[in-house]
Image 1 (cartoon, helix red, strand yellow):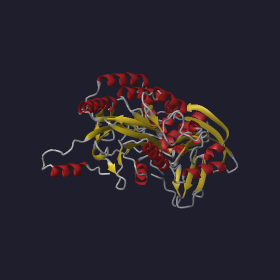
Image 2 (cartoon, rainbow, N blue to C red):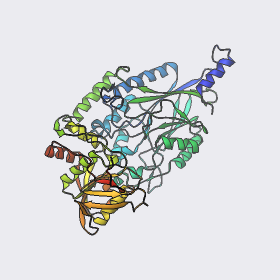
Image 3 (cartoon, rainbow, N blue to C red):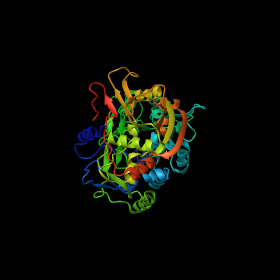
Image 4 (cartoon, rainbow, N blue to C red):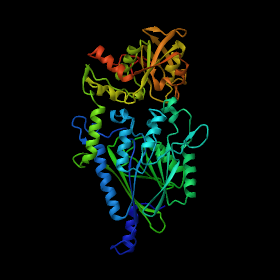
Length: 515
């Protein structure tokens, strides 16, 4: 399919002697967001300039652009779609404390046409998702989320829909990452099977072609790398609205084999994507396109006053008490990367043990979402560290099982576990399950037969993904103590906080600290 707009226009100028186009194309304008993660309130772009971060309008600025683009499309008789790629609410107080209702209210107000689910939409369980779907004025897609009993798409999702815009019959289907089982708490996805992405996409293309659609779009919460693989292996998809990896594409990617157009924003409502398709009104095929990411800096995009007021009022309630001082950090406590001990990891594990009286703590590095900088510690600081709202789970593990948990930590399939109460030495060059070459507890070699009280978060404690070792624990207790509360109490109790890297995790061969 011929889609390069510059070549199209150049060829038409030649055909018409450089004056006017030989044919007037139809336009289909698609505005797209992904991975909103509750980021409705205005915020500062610290990732651009941490010292003088420019303000971003978020939802209020997005509202301005949506209204302008929809009005422009209506005035010109163009088709218009507004789509979302999933992970809509978990990540901010407003999103989490309203269990997504604030985001759904915003999307209803903006007139979204469809969305697909993301892995973090399952962070509060399926009942929360079902409630949000019933409150949404638009369909929610998810073709590869299968009821394990019926073998069909779960009844609260649609595998695909067909919409008509400006004389075009458009089929849309949704996919979620088939790695969901290793990302979600098992109890939250109980009764679900997740079908493979490409195989399901192929089925959806066949089903939509049977509906005689003109165009096929995929709303894929699979990540950019997987989007490209699907585009390469599955013919017939015209456009993929991507999500999950937060891969902002300032220009669309076009698959060289099947000419599938892929777009995605950076997420968190820091930008909104616009894809303008040019359609031959006779053949209903895409003959060209323009794509862009629209920035939402407040100096460039005025905030919609109604949305700004609604969001501000809701956020004030959600963040009550967030900026009250809890204590002081004497040093920066930072994350250390995928294979490193980190000072913030040590702080988290200390708080977990202090809250439960456990001997040993395990915390997945990927679950630590922010650093704590030197100076005043507020609840906002704590909240950012644990944006998932996890709670603590305790259990008894033998020394042998603790060693197995340490081995799980260095499999290489995920970031290393942060630890408390023990010191571990490992050799990444050794075969899997034989990489841990030393574990001590309080300076003494671990006793394989001794029983230790272990604390972890509910995600690891549920034994999802590669973490089945935590299902083997005896005398398990879901404490329902929130990790945030444990950290808050630890700061109040121990301020000023001076937690540093101290050699809890070492590499074999010299025993150097991982810095």
